[in-house]
Image 1 (tube, helix red, strand yellow):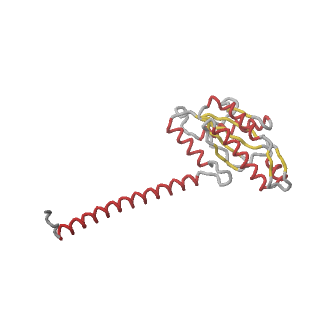
Image 2 (cartoon, one colour):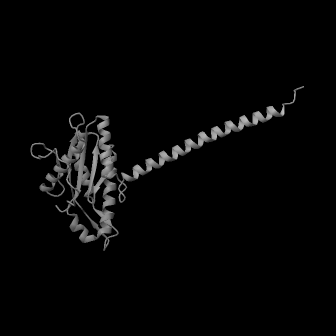
Image 3 (cartoon, one colour):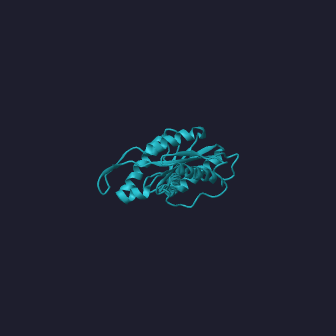
Length: 229
C-alpha cells in the first residue's frame, strides 16, 4: 500500500504550486501590461501622424516615411498635388462642402496610389503628397493622379447640392539617399515643380529640373493656401 503523504509535504507542495502560479501570473500580467503600453504608444504615434479630416497621413507622417526611405537607402519620388482655384470654389459651395470634396478627392488619390504601393499624405487644406517607390514612373503617375482629382464630384453638403469639377497641378521631386543628405529636398523639389506647373495652367504637371527650377537647398515653403492659381 502507498504510504500516506505527510502534512508537511502537502503544505510544501501547495506552497510551491502557489509560488509557481504567482510567478506565472506576474509574468503574464507584466507581458499584458507591456503589450497594452506598446499598443497605446503605437496608436498615439499613428494618430499624431494622421490627418483628422481625410484619414491620410499628415506632414509628420510624410517626413517619417521619407526618413524610412533613407534607412532603406532607396530612391523615391515625391508627388505634390495642389488643387486649383480653391478660394473661388469655397465661396461657391461653402466650407462644409469643400471638406466633402477633399475627402472624396483624397479617396481617389489613395485608391490610385495604393496600386503602386505609394502612401498618400495631406499636407495642408488643399494639398496632397504621394511617395512613389518607383521614381521612373513618377511623371506618368502624377498625370493619372491629377486626372483622378478632376473627375466630376457630387457634393451633397453644398448650399445647393451640385456636381463640381476641380482641377489640380502636380510637381514631382526625386530623392536619392546616397546622393542627398536631407530627405526634405524631395519635398522642396516637388514644391518647386508644382509651382512651375501652376504657372503653366490648370491641370498641369511638372518634374523638377535643377537647371530651370533653382533653389534646391532651401527648406520647404511655409504652409500657405496656394490653390488660387
